[in-house]
Amino acid sequence: MSDINKEKDFFNLSSLDLAPNYIDDFIEYYSEIMKYNSNVGEPIKDVNIDSDEKNQKEELYFYYALPEEAEIITVIINDAFNNYPFLEMVDVENVRNLIISKNSCVFVFKSKANEVVGTISFDLDFQSKKGYVRSLAIYKKYRGKLDITNINISIYVHMYKKYKDRILVWYGESLLSGIKSQHITYLCHLKPIGLLPNKDIFSNQIMSEFLIIAYDRKALKDYRSKKTPKIIIEVMKSFIYASLKYDLTMIDCIEPKLHLEKKKIIDLNREYKLERSNNKYGYISVKMFFKNSDSYFKFLYTPQHENIIKIEYKISFLEEFSVFLDKLNKFMKNNDVRYCEFYISAYEPLQQKLISLLGFKPRGYVPSWKIDKVSGLFEDYILFNKSIEEIDNNFNGEKDYNLVLNHFIDY
Image 1 (cartoon, helix red, strand yellow):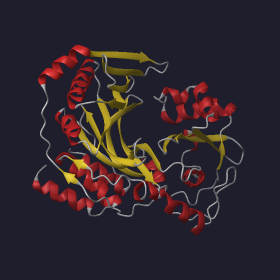
Image 2 (cartoon, helix red, strand yellow; image 1 turned 120 degrees about the vertical axis):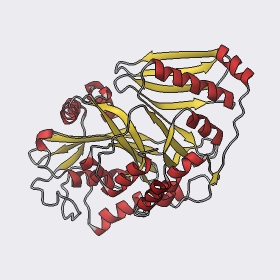
Image 3 (tube, rainbow, N blue to C red; image 1 turned 45 degrees about the horizontal axis):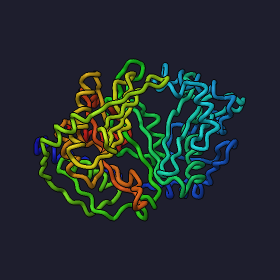
Image 4 (cartoon, rainbow, N blue to C red; image 1 turned 90 degrees about the vertical axis):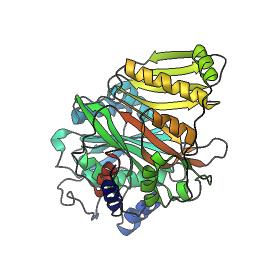
C-alpha cells in the first residue's frame, strides 16, 4: 500500500463509531428508554427508531417455531434466497430437529392474519458461551410491506435477555449485498469485525460477507485473558481497527524467526494420513493426522461453495503445522477451492507467520473469540482467509461496514 493510501486508510478509521455498543446497552436502551416489548407473541408498539419502516402499515408478531412449522420455514428460506445453498436449512427433518433442540432457537414471524411470513434462527453453544445468528428470511412478496426491523429488534432483546450470562458473544455473517439485513443487525449491535471475501455462492453468484459480532461487556472486561497478544506486523492493521472499537491495549508486535527442521518434516510426511467423509448435504469432513500422534488438522470442505471452513487443529510442534499447511494448500489446488478461512491464536506469532507466507491475509482481529479450556478465559484470535478472486468493492452500506471493506479491500 502506498503512503498516500495508508494516510487515507487511517483517516477513514478516524471517522469510526468508537462506541462499543455492548449488548447490555442495547437491552437497556430498547427495554427501558423506549419501553420496548419483547414478549413472545405480542406486537411491537411505541417504538421510534431511525428507520425507513417506522411508518409501516402492518405489525408482526414473533413466536417460537413449532415442529409442524418446519416445512413452511424451509419454503420461506428457499423463496427468500432463490434456492438456499445451505441445504441443512431447507431440510424439513433437520429444521424440525433444530426447533426441538435445547441448543438452538428457531422463530417465526406471523402477520395479524396468523400467516407465517418469515423466520430467523440462533445456534447456542453454551460451553463456548457463543451464539450464532443465521437464516433471517422473509417471503419475497412481503418485502417492503412488513415491519421487519422492529420484529427483529424485539427478538434480539428477547434473546439477549434470556441468555444473558450464558451467551456472552453473539456473531453471524452478513452478505455484502444485504444492505437491509446489515441495517437491522447493526441496530441490534452486531457490528462488523472482519471481511470474508468471495466466501459463498448464492444463486450461482460469488458473494462476499462481513463477520459481525456483539459482545456482552463481561466478555471483554471481565473474562478476557490478561495475556499480552503477540502479533506479526501483517496483523497490525486488523488489530488497529479492533483496538479503536473495543479499546484494546498491550500488544507485542514482533517479527518471528522461522526455523523448521527438514528431517522432522521429511519424517512427518512419511507418517501423514488423510481421512474424509461425506454427509447427506454434500459437505466433506476432512481430517489430516500422523500415525502414532495426537496431532490433527480438521476442516469442512463444501463443494457447493468451493470453500474450506471450520478449521480446527492440534499440534505438538511447528513442523507439524507446516506439513499440515502444505497439505492444505495442495488440497485446495487439487479441488479448485476458491476460498479458505481459519482463526489463528493472537498469542502464536510463528503460526501467524507460516500462514501468512502461504498467501493468507489477516482480515479481522477478533477479541474474546474462544475460551481457553485451562484458564476458562476468552482469548483473542485473528481471522485469516484466502480468496483466489478479486474482491468486488462496489458497495455502499452502513458507515462501519464501508470502513471495514475499505480497510481490508486491498490487503
